[in-house]
Image: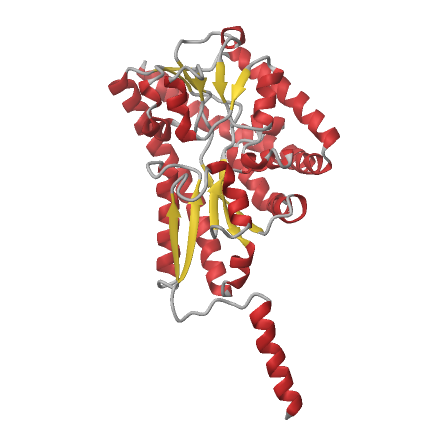
Length: 368
C-alpha cells in the first residue's frame, strides 16, 4: 500500500513539473500574433482558421488572432512565440533568415529555388518530399527554438511590385531604392546590382510617400490595394521571380502544443490543412477582383516584367544559392532535397501546366 501511495505521489509531481496537460473545465485560449494588419485578406484567413478550430473542438480551444504590432512587431514574432509571450505566431520563415539562411528556402525560395519548383510543387515537396521534416528541424535543431511549426497559407506567387515610373530594363531600376523581402532575396537583388530596403508591410506606403523608397513589393493585388499602394504608385509588374512561391507559417509555442490533448492537436492540424486549401481558392478570386478594381478605379497600369529580369534573376539566384551552400551545411541539405524532388516532379508538372496556360492564353488573346 505504501508503494502504491509513493507511485501516486510521484505521478502527481511529474504532472506538475513536466508539462501537465491542459485542464478542460474551461476553454483553452490560444493567442496568435500575426505579421499582417487586420485589414489583410490573410488575416481574414487566419480568423477563419480560428473559427474552424473553435467549431471542431466544440468551443474547447479558442483562438484569438492579433494584428501586426498588437504585442510585438512582425520581425519579433519568432522570439515572442519561443518565449511564450504569445502562444502562436503567423509570419514567413524568410523573416528568420538572418538567424539561418536556410529559413528562406521553406516559405519563399527565390525563382523556384533555381530548380523549377512552382508553388504547388513546392507544397508537394513539403508534404511528400521530406520538406516538412526538414522544416521541423529548422526550428528544433538549427534555430533551437521551442516551437512547433506549420506551413498554413500558400499565398503566392507575389508580383514583382510597384513603381512610380515604368521600367524597361535592369538599368532603369539601378538608381532606385526597392523594398524587397529580407535575407537571401535581398542578396540576389544585390548580386544584380540593385539597392534594396526591408521593412514590414504596414511601413511601405508611408516610406514611399516620404521618398525613402522608389519602388516596392508586398504580397498581391488584394492586400496591396488594402495598404494603399495605388495611392503612391501607378505602375504594377505582375511576374515576380523573387517570391514565385510564398507560403506563410503558423508557429505554436511547443510547450503550449505539447500540453494540448491529442484530439485538439488533430483538430489544429486539420484546420491547417483546410486553410491551405482555402488559401488557394481565396487567392485566385480576391486578387483577380482587386486587379480589375486597381485598373478601372485607380488608373493603375499593369505590366509584364521585362524579360531581361528572368535570365538575370535566375543567374543571380544560382550564384547566391551556391555560395550559401558552401557556407551553410543545412542550407545545402534543404536545397539538395528540393533539387532531388524537382528532378522527378518538375518535368511532369511543367508539361501538364502547359495545358492551362494554353487554354487561358487562347481565351485572353481572343478578347483582345
